[in-house]
Image (tube, rainbow, N blue to C red; front, side):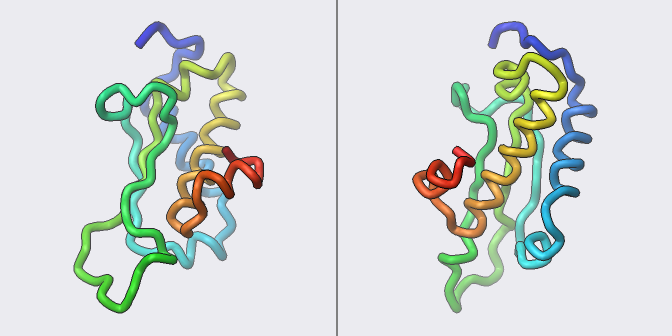
Length: 120
């Protein structure tokens, strides 16, 4: 990956993810179930343009037999995010959008609907 326009440590990026999570309404956070948030530098296999990834079973797809499974994972990728941003303010905005986008997947909202809602 090429040099990024915004030079930001992983620690600072993780802080921004935490701040974005703090902005999610408590009503939503309280109904999220069995999910962890992670920060990685890059997506596996390169994943050009991938800023975040939800891996798991959406709440809307969980049935009576959903038990004893590993937590869902929401991963926010630092380097691709820094690559598309020009300023730290841009990073703050993009992290917030990506966090909301991936949380929406946890609630069963697909890419098409997210784009309709302006969160694509």
